[in-house]
Length: 234
Image 1 (cartoon, rainbow, N blue to C red):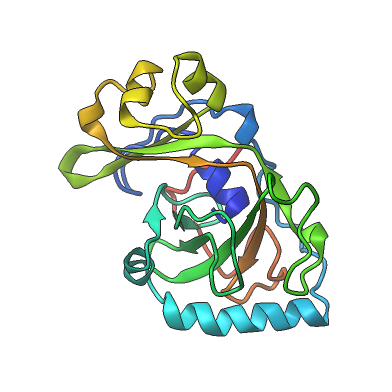
Image 2: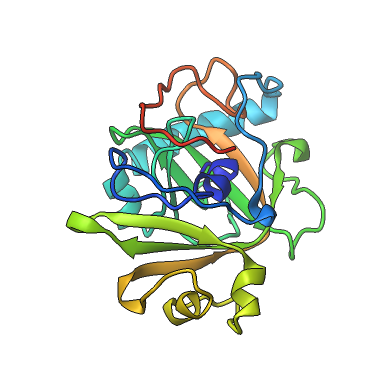
């Protein structure tokens, strides 16, 4: 998700695999984000170009496919979004260096597309100034909760809910649990919950690892063709 992707790509409850039918539900406004556009990003300056070149070489080598990401602790938590990306998060929301993105994204064929880097807003009231990347490249995302449910035939049903709804039911949104999701009326049974986690308030930087004619920091990439099953992020 990419981050603007991953915070928004689960704005709906998605059933089964990328080829399965999907049922939508509204996402809390805290996680809202502008939809991806085809507008090219400002071209990278010299230090940004160096950063992009370094992560392209490194991430392609270490995380060439989803299996490598999962082995390193990244968790898939959604299906394909409108840019063609499927996001995986390691749930470590402070990226210590360019070798440690908080998220990686792949297409439906397992090709590495890009990465998110993140910094907790609690630790950085202002946009981060890291690795030679302009602070203007970083965007803000509000806190929310993600979860995955056991679906038919070994599939996963992905969803998200708001902090207020969870807290109103008496749960601690900083530490979501299966029982808390049931109490909040988000899911029916704890037995179906495969995972749940807090997506905290962060600054997020999206970077295409796959070469992008619109620029490494652009929303969309003409070299990626979403399938007919891709979900809108509106």
